[in-house]
Length: 327
Ligand SMILES: C[S@@+](CC[C@H](N)C(=O)[O-])C[C@H]1O[C@@H](n2cnc3c(N)ncnc32)[C@H](O)[C@@H]1O
Image (cartoon, rainbow, N blue to C red):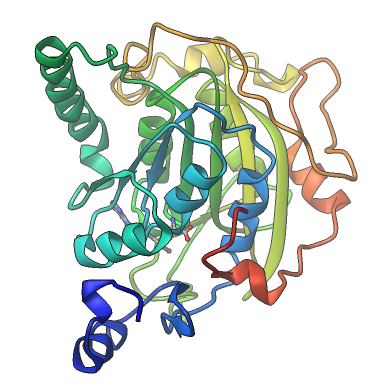
């Protein structure tokens, strides 16, 4: 017996485990959810394991059943907020209980409402702080994870900009998505004339150079990357980038600053949102072989790094979560 009410009787256990589960997660002795074991989560886990998370405040966008928040807390995060457009409250409550971990879960938050939802939560925290004398809350995050989300949204740049707005300067963003491994600046749409490339509700697959450009346009310095082949000419690509106060610009991008004059840009990147507080770099240990850096710019060249690195071949243990896992 696990002591978890969701698994208290055989009937409840059958019904609970019989739902669709995205992740294979151990909930008790010999009880593992029948998840899909998608390999891409191994990329995100690898990058997260390289961050020194001790005492950090983290945000997980598109958390699904909460695998990433469990790992963030296990690796020392002080405070984790997990959001999702869907509501998996029941499953999340069970996962929290099974893993003896706690994090804030905000369901029904669509990516377009992310900043508003965080602002509303922050307003509540300020009031609580005033009444209870609890430490003054801050709105910005030290680490933001946006894994497996960008290829599900119609406007990936908008989502990246919201995620970046929530990140404080010096903080780290982890991104994972389906991507196109071409040396070009474009996004492929999911409908390719003869049929859908991935699931019909998927959207865009950016090339890695375009993702690199978007990140730098949003004042993020790419630091590291990993990938694995995904069929249909796609890859699953993950990278980590540091929030900075400037736009790391390539010589051929001298007009990047003027590109921010686009009327939408200031409404997308909210410089005020995570302002204030600590700006010390959150420590990150790069993988080997070393990432390929751009001379003079100081950022990792994501496409060159992907080409220089062998694909990850996830072990079975990396695509499921076990009660003892820390990474
Ligand atoms: C493929 S899963 C990725 C889960 C997890 N982040 C990971 O990397 O393993 C995509 C998640 O993003 C959520 N999602 C998709 N589109 C969204 C949107 N527009 N707004 C908010 N959440 C969204 C889904 O509900 C789901 O939980």
